[in-house]
Amino acid sequence: KNNNRFVHSLYENVRKDDISCCGRYLSIKEISDVLAPQTAVPYAMPVGFTVSIPLDDLLIFSAFSEYPNSLFGDLKIKFKINPSAFVFCQVDPVMSMAKYYTIKKDELLSSGQDKLKDIDLFFRNWSLTFQYTNMFTQIGCTADLITGVRAEELTPSGLKNLVCDIKPVTVSVRNYIITAVTANMCGYKASDACLN
Picture 1: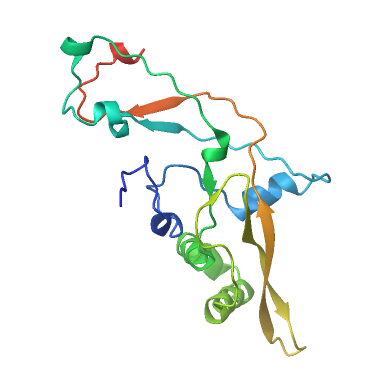
Picture 2: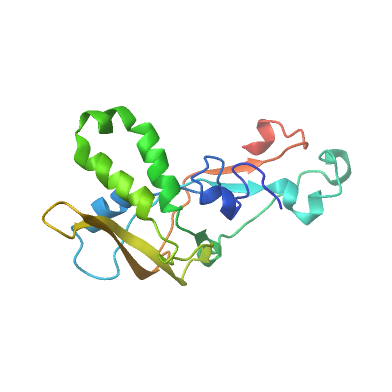
């Protein structure tokens, strides 16, 4: 398993909301804020992220411990990005909620018991019967994603049930603009001048 930070992403790390992923995390709030005013399907959302090209993964460079400039002179690399080659996945909701609780703990404790009861209900009642897609899905393909989680009151006494909305979602790239590209060149002793 190759897990070069910010270059390769393992599903086990991404589902835990690990910061080392190569890509971008989008919260449900970010998505709902952008999509809420839209009425026509398909919904559109601009997403920015940096493309990282691991040059040391390319076959032509794999045999060299350092860049053989004296042998080959300058090399030019042209690349094209295939938007269908990107993948997406959903972060484990329990991990996501645990991180949210850790970050916002003081705010939640001061906001009253209702939010804390809902979070407690979430952790206690999260069920394996909520079957969402637990893997990377290629752009353009459909995955079953959790689109909403809410506490629903069952009785007037305050007994609640956890309701989870799971719907088929297709993510596609309509167009893209490259504004910045980084290249990881470990061991090639590339100077700043050659990168311009």
